Length: 106
Image 1: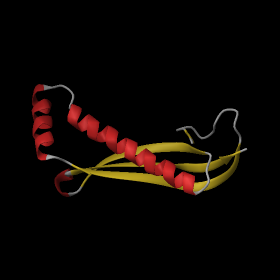
Image 2 (image 1 turned 90 degrees about the vertical axis):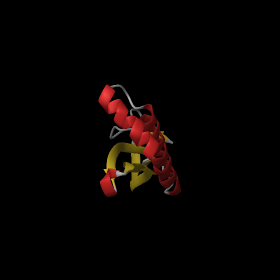
Image 3 (image 1 turned 180 degrees about the vertical axis):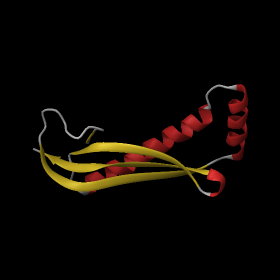
């Protein structure tokens, strides 16, 4: 499956647009990860724990996006966009949404 953030694939004309596809991942925040991230906020530096959670969420959302496009018979997904949001009570959960357009290539 070819995936891209651009609206076309160089040298591969789009023969048919199959529709919008999406994948979502929602991850709960962990109290210990929050505690250590808070300390990082005070002393500075990167929060490896949160980076790993975001990376895992992104991978899961993209995997679901690809699975949905495959069910439609797509060869590629163009125009992929990623959105990250904090949701829930006190922003206690993190959400990653991947969207794009499933297409058949010529």
